[in-house]
Every structure is written in C-alpha cells, then in structure tokens.
Length: 392
Image (tube, rainbow, N blue to C red; front, side, top):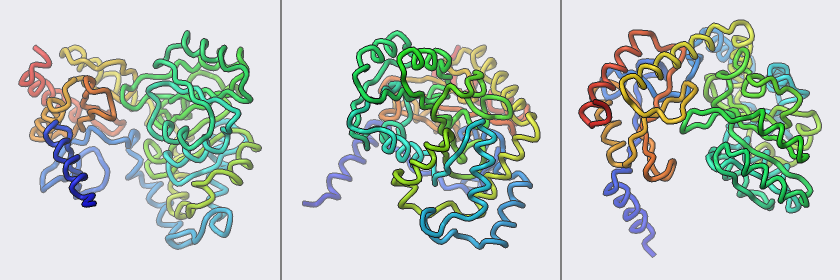
C-alpha cells in the first residue's frame, strides 16, 4: 500500500475546503511584536497572557539553574530525575493553589492524560462538558471508565446524568475552568453544588485560567472562593506562566497515587532544571503583585467592548480569549490571511477544532499590549471586517 497517496489526498481535501494551514516560522521570541518573513507583526494569538516569557527574573532564574544543574535532569522522576528544584516548585505550586500537594508533568496535555487515566477505572464514570479541551477528551479515551457528556454548561443535564449514574463506584465531573475556543468561564459554583449533592468528584482544568482568574492568577477555584471543594485542579505552566509544563494540585494522597500510576510521569524525563526554575520564578512574580493580572483584564475588557461596538460577533467571551465568529472555514482562513497582510497575526480556527459553521479568528489580549497596539489592531480589524461584510 502506498500510504503516502492517502496522506496526500487528505491534505488536498483540506486545501480544497480552505482548511489547510502551514506553520508560521517566527524570527524572534514570543512577544507582543514579532518578526515574520522580515516583517514586524502584532501578535494577537499568543497564550503569553502576562508577557512573562521575557521577564528578567525568569530569565535570570533559567540561566542560574543551567549554571548549577546543567541543561537536563538525566532521567524520569522515579529513577534519578527528581532534583531539589522540582520539589521546590511543587511545594510552591501547592502553596499558591491552596492545596496539600502538587505534581508537575511535562505538559498540560500529558497532565490530563496521566491524571484521568490514573484516577478512573472500569467501575467508574466520567462526566464531561461537551466543549472540554482535546487533552481531556484524549485522557478519557485512555480509561476504561464509562463516559457521559453533558451539553455545554447545562446544569440541568449535568444533574440528570448525576442522578442516573449513582450506581458507579466513582463519578468524576470534568470541566475546563475557561473554555479555550470561546473564552467563557465554567459555572463552577453550580457544578460543585451538584457534585456535593450527588457525591461526585470535581476535576477542573485551569489551562486558560492559570495566571488569569483569581487573586494573583490562582485560577478558577480561587476566583469563585471554592477552596477545599474542588478535588482536582489541573494547571499549566505553558501559557500565562511563560514556560512549559503542567501540574495537578490536590490532596497528598492523590499525588502519591499519581507518582505510582500516571504513565506520562513514569515514562518521561522530568523538566529541564532551567524550566523548573523559570516556573518557580514566575509563581513568585505572581505572588508579589497583582498588577499584571489587573492590566490583563483592563486590556481584555476594553478591547472586547470596542469589538462589540464595531459590530463583531465575539460569542460568549468573558475573558482575554476573544473570538470573532465568522462561520465558513474558508472564509475564516481568508479573513486571518487578510489580517496578516495588515500586520496582525490572528489565527483562524476551523473544523474539526470547532463546529463546521463556527469558524472563528481567535484573538488573545495580553497584559503586554499597549493602548497603541490595541488601537492599531482595532483599526485593522474594522477595515478588514468591512471588506468581508462582517460589520457595517
């Protein structure tokens, strides 16, 4: 079989449908303005919410860690790959999140894979919001647990599922804290209340809430004042924290169990010391001041309001994730390409990441964007939006 013919056919189909997207190769580091093909481009799609990728304290921490430890940790954590900097980071994360313990993984994606596949067995059921992140979906697929899906943020349907699943050993309700495609926030207080009424475990993935929601960016549990009532908190170190990695925050017993059962933890070399040190410095920066988080929200709320005033459809956004809903996949990608011509990088996101008729350009506003940056973006969006008939 010439399998390459099949691959080529798939790719040609994506091109014909307008869904093919080549990877952009940037000539500068992650920042507000970046260099692409010799041009200076305003970055409006980065997860670098707080601009920490260039923070002097984080850079200094990384350099010092390389001088002390070298560039690698040498092994998986359970053999020789756990260094004191890893333990220090986990202790600081647990303190930051208000939990007994935390365990760091190599990425947010592998965190969900490792945690879900470890805590769920054949006698359990996982109950998941229909718009949860792909890492949650794939993590669930790795389990032998029964699966139930409830309509997005539909608490009546969630309650109905909880009622009909009382015979399972464990019921685990899984939700994103902030949904990555729409920028809306989970109704966590309602979820917790239902879970308590029906004796279920609450599992929250705060990938896009880490460093964004809550005091000093502590996440959705802190945002809603639910400490002690959310059993498992998943966080990322790859977005607002400015580096890479993920973690589980919860009970000490949960940590010990994951150390012995979570396959991504057991079979992947641990974070390079410089990365662990960088993440530790980022958490310390967040604890020292709320100014970056405050600036992030000021920028996001003002920008979203201006887009709505122009007539753009921003969907259910209530966070720094602000989609402009366009619909047709090909039209969405053309809109994204046209913005790039104007000097703005705003990634088009289409099926299968979102529904076929829900293509959108996803904008992410950061604390680093200046008012001049945002004014430039609004002017360009208004111009292109009129060209495409999205606004009058």
